[in-house]
Image 1 (cartoon, rainbow, N blue to C red):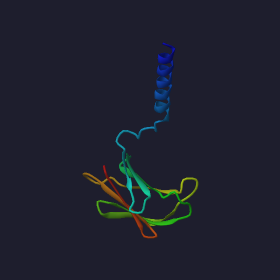
Image 2: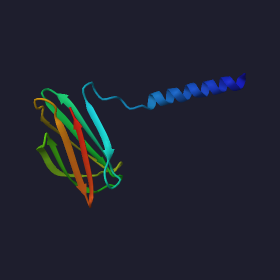
Image 3: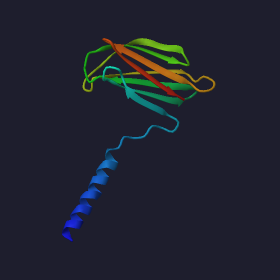
Image 4: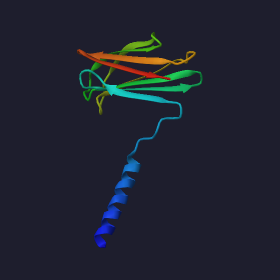
Length: 126
């Protein structure tokens, strides 16, 4: 009987720990897409409707600090960002945050990042 209580208590503590460790969900209406780059890095693209515009966050995590990536963002094939970003400690990632117009209909946002022969191609629709 004592063994069952111990198992039940351990299961309850484990369930509570998992519930507390879960990340906070995005706001209602936000879209988050994730994927892998062709060289092992990972990307995340978040789109968030805000005041008639779309907030865009494009993140690439290579787990290496100091890399310079070339980044482009487009909305329905119309470019709205072109620049570079540098991965930083502690995670070896970068994030580009910008906005674009909320076009009529569905916005198909794509992000491309390249570094030393590796390419990340992200896409999400809002």
